[in-house]
Length: 611
Image (cartoon, rainbow, N blue to C red; front, side, top):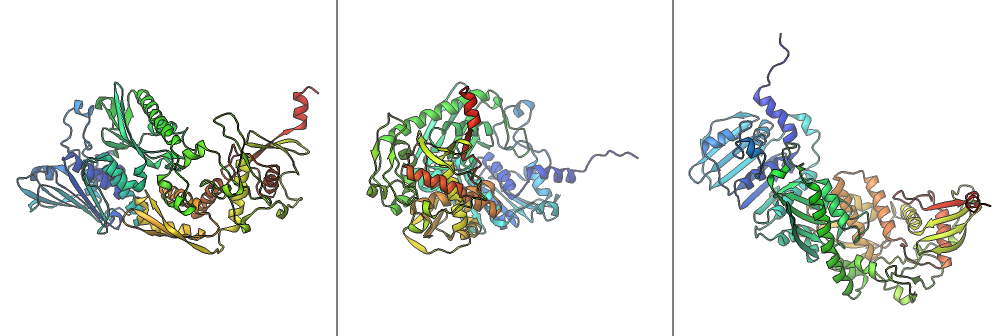
């Protein structure tokens, strides 16, 4: 008896569905791409229960005849390509002819279409077609998908909760809207409108509907060389994220994942933002279709590109040029300082990071007696600036003055000499405003002042914040969190995380969250960055252990409240920092894994000096 036999059509469609239909958002993506290929100007998407109960995509495109509708659900049936030459120069989104039969093999699909002549309706129940019949509809197509994966329970195990699936779908539609600002998109989740664009062919308008007030600080760009053209919109460097999630790429209007281009974009911003932060950039790449291969994976996210080095050089050189122009302009015009709450509320309109790079930053280290701090600017020959106490109280948003109960005083530090990891040290001096030099029995210790302070603050927050109760203070002006519209549906999950920090977000409209009160342990000007870092983590990893997320959130807060590089400290402040570091449970590394100090042993010094 022969062992090898050809699989039937239904089984092959179900196998193909494993790659084409990974989750409800994959179905939405395929159906919306078909609607765009049909020259639609308005596309409406409705989902229930995260797409598991139903998905409906309606458009006003060209529609299909009854014969085409019936044929469209046959495997490898498509109107997009006909010859090998067509496959080598793909301009449409769909071309494989796998999506519709794959979707229909794992769900109940109802399709209604009108090609401006007659309307028809077709029902497919898990791959089995029912009779084609006439139906009333305006020009265009509607496809409804019900009971997804009902007969494939193994797939259901990998589907997350409803809020998670809704956020993935909303993110997908927002990417479509950004890539096609000339098309109006409407997304309804459980009959609630969660996103809408109006098809005005205005990319800045769509950017605003996704990211909110950040759109006030954007740069539109355009450049080209012989083979490529790039254009799009990007937020200025002071608006950034902790992950690459907000770098959106399109090639010939197709949304893609292209890590090399993402890296080139991130590298362009490196001089203008911290190394662990990433920009908000939308980039559309136009190229001869013969140079790009989109037939890499059935999901069509991955591509292969010829002459990619020329593209990467164009991206990096042009974005660096645009950023340099923008940064120089912003360095000249500084806005007057607002009160702490006002500045936090208006942070999305201020030029925080560029101000920090251009003007001296005054901070008080949490030691007993605060002395005037001498600060130098690295960008020009050193000049000494003495900061008076009243000026310190009105310092920039990175100010780390602490309330009395939060101060770390050198006389309050109790060190168990039997369990300490660092021997007693004598502080000698500070080098370049970056490192503290200290002497111990082993040799010369070089302490990274920022990494050391991060460790101190991290353990302080660990001990003092989690699972403890602090008084609340209402914000004079509630803090608006914008640019995270895809997380609105997950606000309960977010608040469960924030509850450990005694914070609670509320929905405010369709794409904004609002914070009305904060605990007394956190400074007004630290709140926005702290919450955004948590939202970035949730958005980046989708699902993450609460313990890991809280640990990373505390590490971020410790970083923001720590003494910086190029900040000159008094002798008493350096002594307090070193003593506090020795008192830490794990003093050798900062929360991010970097070493807090290194030592040059006496024996090594003797060898180097040939003694």
